[in-house]
Image 1 (cartoon, helix red, strand yellow):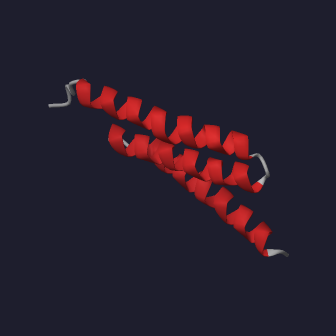
Image 2 (tube, one colour):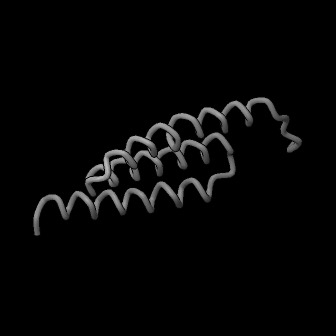
Length: 82
């Protein structure tokens, strides 16, 4: 098999690991970091699949904008777990 096939398989495995990490976290900030990692891996996969416009959009919206909005929202809310 080609090295590109191994790269895509490795990225898909990393994507699944990051998604499971994001889902299973109790801390919301860590869950947002996991979701951001999913967006980064998806952006790389889109670029490899020769869709650079989709990769750029995923990187800008999925990684940057969504993560910033989630982190600001989590920091502005109070936690009642005490």
